Each structure stands twice: as C-alpha cells, then as structure tokens.
Image (cartoon, rainbow, N blue to C red):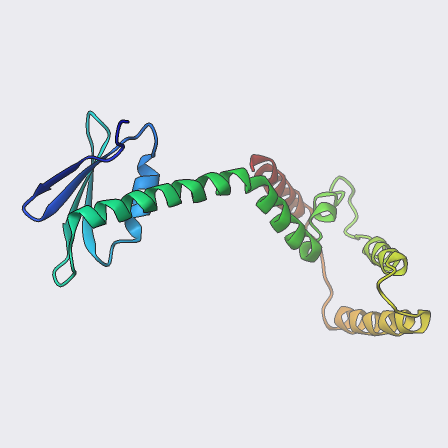
Length: 188
C-alpha cells in the first residue's frame, strides 16, 4: 500500500506530501483551514505532489503524528464534501431558482415582450394562475368569500399604490436586463 501522506519531522515542524492525483490543491487548502487556530501552513508544488509545511503556533499542544492523522481525516472529509457538493449542484441550483422564482416571477420576467412599443404588462395572468392553484389545492380550506375579501384588499392596495406613483417602463432597459438574465441563466 502506498501512503498518500509522508511525514518529515524537523525543527518541530511537520512536512507532508499530499498526492495531487487524489487531492487537489483546493482540497488540501480547505482541509488546512480547519487547523488555522493551531498551526501555520505553507504550500508548495513539488515533484511528488503538494508539499505542505506545518509549523505549530506557540501555546498549542503539538504532536506531529496526531496532527498528520487529523489532517488526513480532514482531507478525506473535505474531499467527500466537495464531491457531494458537485453531485448535488444541479439540485441545489434548481431549488434556489424555484425559491427565487416564486418571488421574482423569473419565467414571466424573461417573457416580457419588449418588441412592442407598449409599456403595459398584463399582471392579471399571474393572479389568475395563482387563484387556479389555490382553488385546485385540496389542502387549502379557503372559501369563495375569503378569496373575494383577499382580492378586494389586493385591489385596494394596488389602486392606492398606482395613485401614489405612476410607473413607467423603459423598454430598452428591460431588453438589457432580460438579455443579461438569460445569459447568466444559461451559463449555469
């Protein structure tokens, strides 16, 4: 069995060679982060792998053998977290996109028709869609009267807001934002 760490004890320092075929430089540095309160780390790329030189901080208890084993455990743990993170990236992004989409209405944002010279957007489509979802959800126990009361409140609030401030849309800015958003969305 070939060890992936080799130790060299010299002047109360520990020198480890990390096999870069197993662990990337990033993994080795992330693993070292956990021990920054106990030691100083220096990294250098060598012929056999990544050379990690560790010097204990003053006042900390030091056992180079124990520290090497702890660092080896943290290398494995960091590698595993990194692989799980990579495997679940698509799922995480989908969850975040849906969470943000429920507030920002991102699909409809990118479907705003900027080719027309109109500055009106039909927001009623979204309200109708929400109402259909509420009506079709068997777990929600909202009666027709409650829905009408909520709609009346929303209408009163939106009329009050419309009287307070007239909103105008700059179609060129919407086009730019839409293009920027679509470019970022597909880059993921």
